[in-house]
Length: 165
Image (cartoon, rainbow, N blue to C red; front, side, top):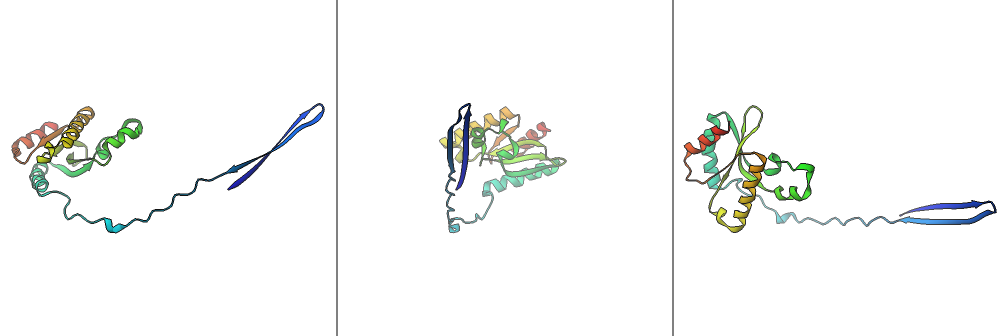
């Protein structure tokens, strides 16, 4: 706690009229208590992708290798999309979200396109809303987004990626 004393002396032609001593006390906010973290509440995951995502990744990798491109799985949206004026509300809409695959050039990692692998979970109400948001987000930022399922012909995927080059 800090104590500040300020003296005011008012003068007039008749001498000292008023003398005041004002005390200001700076009360610091109490420091937050450090919460103990129980690390036993965390555990490692065995895999970074589902088996379906891995299968799709391997097929996609054949295409990207052939076209001299690179593929990054599970890229956080904040790595490929920025929010104007760093608006917190808009940042929160993309924070902690990712896109399944981001295809980039080998030369400088420029984004070519992004791909979402749509499985049965994309039929759930909350996923449908999320997908609508992602579709509009990618459209408005000019990043080409393709949605495929495991039955999509590999030739179509290759053709779509070539169209982005």
